[in-house]
Length: 457
Ligand code: GDP
Image (cartoon, rainbow, N blue to C red; front, side):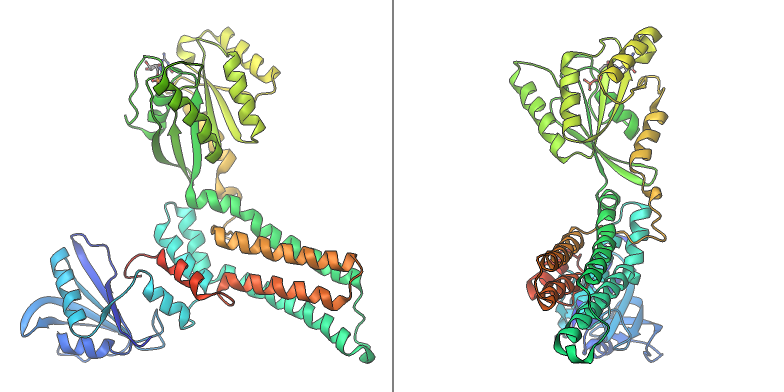
């Protein structure tokens, strides 16, 4: 880690300011070569001056200096705040590189912060989550995890497991001392407690996943029921082409919209029906295949046509997959109330969720539909201000693995194995938890995680 690295830390676009970040033991030397000011640079202060390239003024800038180890990376860090033009920012970076710095890899600043113990792996991952956050909830959760909420919990769990192992080992190694007797039942009890505690964190992932990736929604229904119109209505502008020729939505149109605290990724799919039209067919197959990746289906029925055998077939497929779904009868503006009631009864009698009656055209019932979606997914149910929520698949997988080891430990006890065998599995579980915070990770994993960062972070 002897090199001094530099990169543009802000997005390259014309803006008020840009920041060029430098980290490493030569940071100050490099700055002193190119920066002239009447004031000396001191740690934690920002100084006004000029960037000079061989006596030629490139820009008037502000430079800050953070002395190791009190910086983001734990190394000497200097940051140049220059004017936010593409060219000037690149010119200053170039000058910094010519003065002895190496261009940083994506995520290299954060990686150094991790390697220098400024933050653990889960905190570094929360930094990426914060940068990529698309909703308020998502950014709040990321901020809490940067603060170390997840790390703290993992450390506690590990300490408790280590204590349990020590307890086991002491009683195995020094039975003559008659330490508090370790009863297998009491160990099982403790293991169960930890399994349920970790399981509870794993369970937050589903919500966390929605918060992070959004809810994947498919709008399904036969041709001409108003799927594209509904997509437009929800997205508030004309994206899908709306026509009154059945089956015109040939491909899948995608739209991302914010609803309450959640992001919906809505796919408008080709109408589902038996058809010989090959293009239509590809669309229909895609429509069914797309269900695999869905979290929610909005199933539309045309009030004028009523509910058909095919509708029931698709709806039962949706139910069999255990998918969340909402049914709506559209075009209520041109459908008799008695017909709406009949369709509603028919659906409910067949075990389908009670439909909402809507008119996409006249914007009736859309708020009710939106509220139903919010009720199904909105994360405000989960009090993210108090509750620890995980949003990373890596964390979820490791937590599950840690639970499996604890279950293995339990099985050993139940099979009457000596108590010290049990501690092997508890140790494996502890090690697995350690991978979340980076205590027991390989270089490959570290490289893979930081690769996902943007340049300059
Ligand atoms: P899709 O094939 O399911 O995507 O249906 P479209 O969104 O293309 O709509 C088909 C036709 O139904 C269009 O002419 C729409 O204007 C019309 N339509 C959609 N929603 C309503 C509605 O609530 N009421 C009425 N009367 N017509 C609607």
